[in-house]
Length: 606
Image 1 (tube, rainbow, N blue to C red):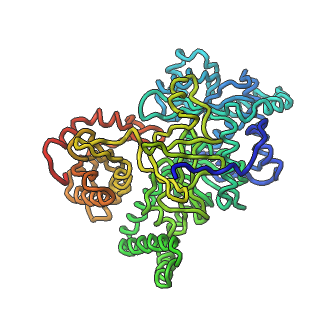
Image 2: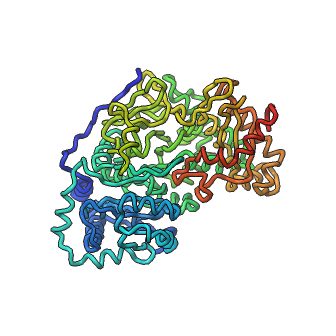
Image 3: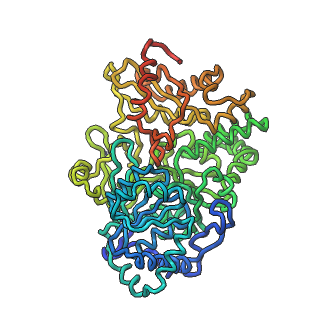
């Protein structure tokens, strides 16, 4: 079959909106802890609990401040910040005031800020730092509709609360009831690997219906008694915004951390029961664990335990299950290795949800064998994040699961994934042409390629626009090769090339964070990226990584040559989007000389 749909499991009154979801959470148990936030330093202060009633009171107070600053129902309120409590507070306060929050990545350039602010008609903008405010000020003259800029580090929340003291409760009650499921709840601008970001109109219904149905589909994770999660992904991204609503629907506790360099410390202190992240984080945790084992002289034990975890996880999918001998080895490995990895993640986490890119079957089995089951899912900005996800009772490692309730997917003739359902957005703001191009007969065109198995599990096979056609006419999807190579501890990014060329090649960048640990693990003096790119041992390791990746494809699709660059692809140098996707067109343009050099002479290896 090339089409699978899951009927909606939870119905919602059409006149409802997200404010009703928060009201229901408060009514269920006003004294229950809903959020834990840092007091004092947002990166290292103690975790202080906030009940549902206390959070709702703060939401109302800030909403009054927005009203006092002239924000009318439907007006746009911009938020430019790292991931912290105040962002979630401002989201819900905006909805309580009848406004539409517009997220802006805190890494955005002045030009990007100007585009989003003017295209969406932001009237009031809250930045996190004075530096962010200075970026906004650069383009203030080009955004005449932007009346007010407040800064969190300079007391923006206190300013809003103080200014709203004379606004009556009845006004907030009135505004809370204005929107219905069809109204726009937020504009989320696609980070855009090419072209100008497009503002996706996401409705109250998109978030409300998807979250309550996701909680119904995955209760073991999202509504588990005592459940709690630490949010560290950018809140300008749809995945994190979805989680900000999901925790309200599910009744679990939410916390935030803005500094991913302290992530392991934060996980250890907060102790989440479930983790939400992107594959790169799980790759780095694995690589870091491997390097620590090597530093302690326990690399062989780690590799044995890793192989045991993978074998044990795969055996779970066999009707016979793991055998007695494998079970014994698994128990020993748990005491020696797995328990330490779980402790590093806080000690309480049994589940993780991964999205934003392929995780890879090997890592999926490794973590499940360690006691942290990663439920891989798939979705886009335009689908309010997930359309499909593996669940604890229906999981196939390597796939992105079945469609969530209220969601449907089909494959076009060329394998492109088309989506329809409660989660699909309302179109692009101020861009009817792009909106029309995005749909075919009511189905949203994702641009991704995939396949279904007989039970409806979806597997992502590539990106339609990224398909490489070699000079010999071979179609190659680069994602599989890139993901496997990027999983290596030495590698930061990999871009496969070869369009209209005689064979497939690759550009590889080294991970400056992973390099010191790798050098120590292999008894080498610490190398800079510039030194490492030409080091024989580094090259030999990369040769092995490429050879392993090539085992997943045919000879015609395999990487024959690669080039190691002396620079990384980052958000700061504009080769990565804020959601960590490589801007392939820009990379191939700026590094065309390196690509040409690959094809100067035909050969293998380097």
